[in-house]
Image 1 (cartoon, rainbow, N blue to C red):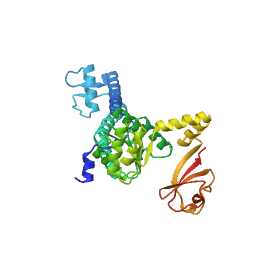
Image 2 (image 1 turned 120 degrees about the vertical axis):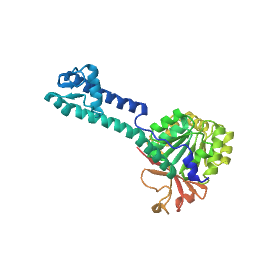
Image 3 (image 1 turned 45 degrees about the vertical axis):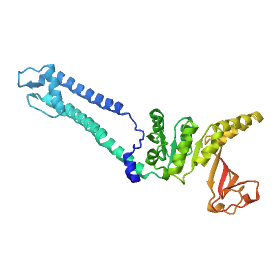
Image 4 (image 1 turned 90 degrees about the vertical axis):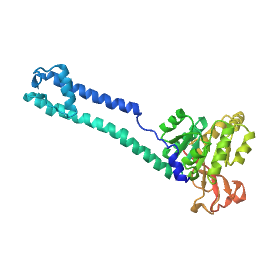
Length: 341
C-alpha cells in the first residue's frame, strides 16, 4: 500500500468552522419561517383582494395555502390576486420575500451539500501536502500550553497539527485554529496521516510516561530526521525517552524544583526563569542558526538587545566564556537572550 493511499483511507484532518451545524440550520430555518409568517400576515390582511375560484371564500387556511404555493412559485391558479392593491402587494412585498426565502434554502443546500464536501476535500489536499508543520501529540495541560506558546510566538495555527484521542480536547484545539486528528498517536497510520516525516518538529505529551515513550518510538521510526521533544515526569524515564529517540526530554517536576530552589535563594530568580521561558515576558530565550553576516564575529556581539549564551558546534556545547565562542562559524547554532519588551 502506498503512503498516499494510506492517507486517503485514514481519518481526515479537521479544522474549526465558525458556526456549529445545528446552530447554522436553526438560524436558517428560523429566518425562513419568519419570512413566511410575514407573507401569511400580509395575505390575511389583504384577503379581500384575493379570489378563490373554488368556493369564492378566502379562509385562513386558504391564505396559508396560497402563501406556500406563492413562496415556492408553484402557482396553481385557484387563488389569485385580483385587486390593484393585492397585485402591488405581490410585486412589492411578497416577491422580494419569495426571493429571500429561495436564497435561504439554496444557500442551505450549498452550505451542507457542496461547501462542506468541498471543505472535506480541501482538508484532504492539505493533509496530503503537509510539510514544515509542528505536530503536537497529546493535547493535555502541557500540550495545550505548548500550542498557545507557539501561536503567541507567531506560528500560524494552520501550521500546527494536534493528535489526541479526546474529542473534547480537540474541540479546544480546533477553536484555536489548529488542524486536528482524533486518534491514538502511537498508531502508525495516524502519524502517517499527519505527514509526520515532513514535520519541522514533534512535541509529545501524552500524560503518562509509558505512553509518551511509546509515541516517541513510533514517531522516531516514521520520522528519523525530525526533532522530537517529549515530556516525562519520572527521572528514571528520562534515559528511556532519549533511547527511544527523543532529542529533548523535559521533566516538569525537575523544572519546578529548579524554580523552587531559585526562589529560596532570591525572590526574583524564579520570576526571571519563567520570563525567559515565555514569549510574554520582557526577555526570551531564542535558539537559531548564525546568519552569514555573523560568521567571524564573537558570541557577545550579536547586536543590540541580544545576549549570546551558548554556541552548539558539531554537537559540542560552548559557553560564552570559552575561547571558541569568540569566533562564530557557518552552521553554528546559538542560544541567546533577546529583549522583547
